Picture 1 (tube, helix red, strand yellow):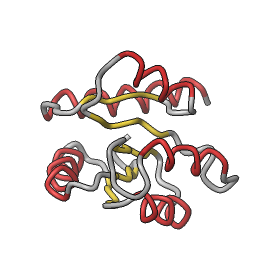
Picture 2 (cartoon, one colour; picture 1 turned 180 degrees about the horizontal axis):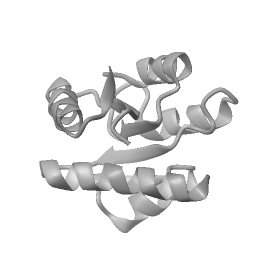
Picture 3 (cartoon, one colour; picture 1 turned 30 degrees about the horizontal axis):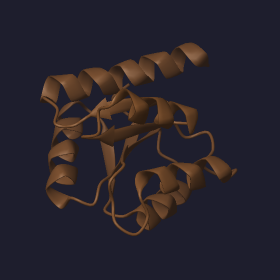
Length: 128
């Protein structure tokens, strides 16, 4: 599972760096994007195994990015976990309805994030 590549998308550079360190510590390879447009480009170029996608970003928010990814034949199959401080049930439901595979809450502990990411990959493996 450690060879999996994850694209972390958040407009907050500190969050991206912290998340990258946590995921690297868990044995994952990490790509970074600080904007929605960059996320779409990197997803098309590298086809990561998972995208952690923040919702609140300027210019192109996470919902718009998710919709673009799910409408593109090159990225439609990449699982996306919404990655946000917005924890209301309506946000989680909206994410799943729009095609997100899961929803990860911020802030997170290191063990919590790694555990959730590993669970996502276990669930994905079960669908194969």
